[in-house]
Length: 124
Figure 1 (cartoon, one colour):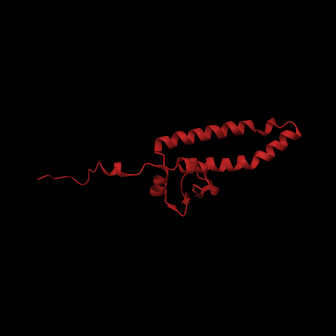
Figure 2: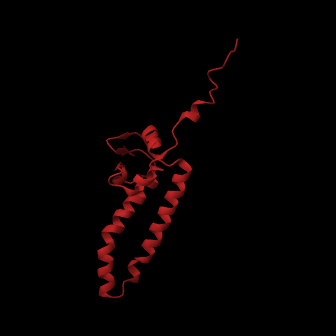
Figure 3: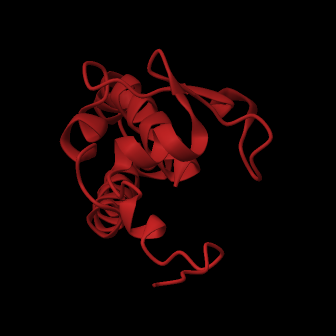
């Protein structure tokens, strides 16, 4: 006869999914590719409801099946690349009309990338 205590269950935490998509779905709720972050600490108004779709988000497409450790490294890399890119396009470096034109041409991409970085950092 083997008697087990049901309050001490070391196996159940090992059964949880550790991939990005599974954790978002299980912990935050993923419904129709939307994640509701309303009520989460330090989340701005524009990030209260975000879309996580592999069709629209290259970072999510690449990293949705990676485990938590690999995901942290990927977000850190993405953040460093974004910081490097914003330093290159700093408004104080705009000396000529051509520089301003180049900045304005790249601005939509920078803004989109900024929102993408903010979204994934807020989810983490």
